[in-house]
Image 1 (cartoon, rainbow, N blue to C red):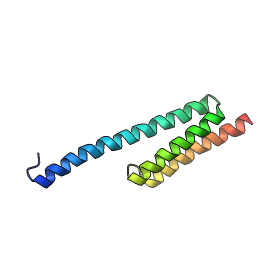
Image 2 (image 1 turned 180 degrees about the vertical axis):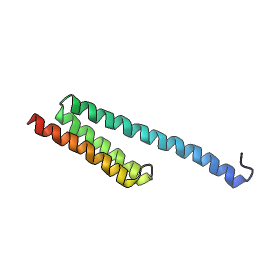
Image 3 (image 1 turned 45 degrees about the vertical axis):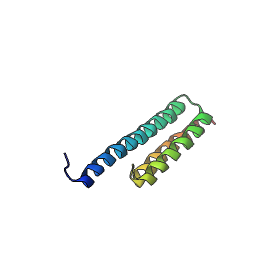
Image 4 (image 1 turned 30 degrees about the vertical axis):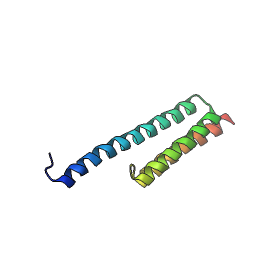
Length: 91
């Protein structure tokens, strides 16, 4: 345990930040699962709307430093490819 006051404060801040980052990551995972479920159910309209929500969450996490920028972009790109493939399959 830290003895210096600034180190104690830093430890408190890290706990709060870790919880916030964990909540953001969990929300992203849930959004991705919803997109994949809509794609597997062959529901194009729902998958497009859910993709927009997931992309916004990825961008927010990227901006806050929760995810590396390239990681967020790669995951959004892969989701978009699946939605685009669904559009070709449905049409």
